[in-house]
Length: 262
Image 1 (cartoon, rainbow, N blue to C red):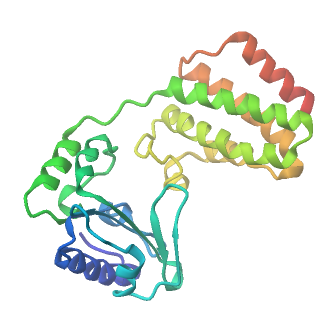
Image 2: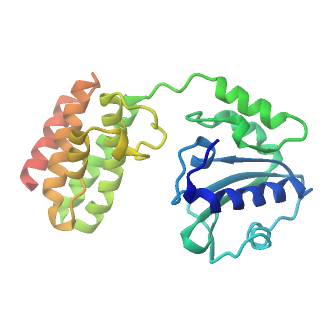
Image 3: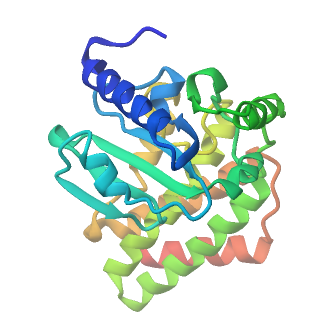
């Protein structure tokens, strides 16, 4: 795998981390994941790993990493992932879990999965077998109806709090609405390479019109009425284009509420 020149630091640290993971007897299996293993990384990308620990292993993630590189900040994020920030804002994620969770790999998504690049430590072949089995699975078919159903819920929620006058709350709820519209727009335009993270490389993959419409639903606190109106219109257009079901009375209620606020 060839690397861009600005990935030299990533490559050196990755090699150091892999060597340390292999040498640590507390770690029975380890893998890397993310853009660095997919060949899409750049100088702003993270380094990400899963460490599978032997039973009863005493393992301090931050202390372990600090023996290899200076750590400026360390936190267990909202999703339970130990995350370190190094100089230059380089982020390193290190999931450290019991090796009894190896079986959980079968529930991973398999977009852009490259087992040979991901394998770090696998003395008994269990990790390789699990990754190869996962990679061989057919990509999941996007459940666009479920995505739309969740989107309609967030939209009704956002429109209601906006009508109540809770503008900051309504602005925060736009994040969920944007997160529902982006995968539907990606499916509608045929760009389904990153459905697990549809914002990934969106500027390179999606059409200028799709990006323009997305920008129209990202308004400031002062522009919420216009943003919600655009979101309602785009959602119902995408539902029709994709042949998805929307209760007609609900669609009318959404249009009316958005129209009143506009």
